[in-house]
Length: 224
Image (cartoon, rainbow, N blue to C red):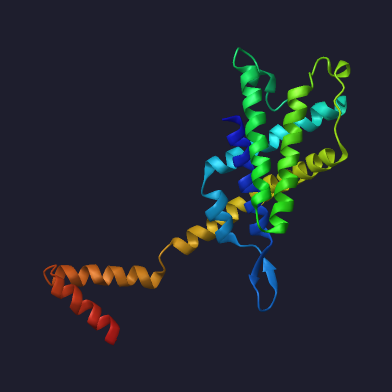
């Protein structure tokens, strides 16, 4: 469940970045915001937005826990206590299960044909794996007694992922209300459509509500 929410949180983040910098017109090389994509892939699914926030807080927790700076800790209150995830008899099993599944996901990324997609995907998956590694290994109370060795590319991936997730959360908060208003306006029937429907209904009732009456109305509307 935890791994599913983390991976699911990456999906709306990637979709958000694609939607806000989208090739709208290839002939003129015009780039801009694709509000329909933003709504269809992200905003219309509250669970996806919720999982994005969960993934962001998870990675943020890993970064603040690794640095262990009092000022940073005060600026970023504890979003959740990850220690509760590993408590109980199922705690060690859950860790092993997540690690095994995560290795499978990392291996699957090699099957992606698009080189650019594979590069970005592996970078973000590595960042998420680094966050898991930190929260698996570092004890918040005795972290100085448990030195954690991270490779340079792991640190880069973690910082990059935190940046991408932060931007996604910011964009959703800023664009969300305006995008939903635009979509609602597009879905709402126009004045002409409402007038046509009203006339159709009145015509339909006056002529007995038959199929022939409906056909006559359509004929008159087209010829007029």
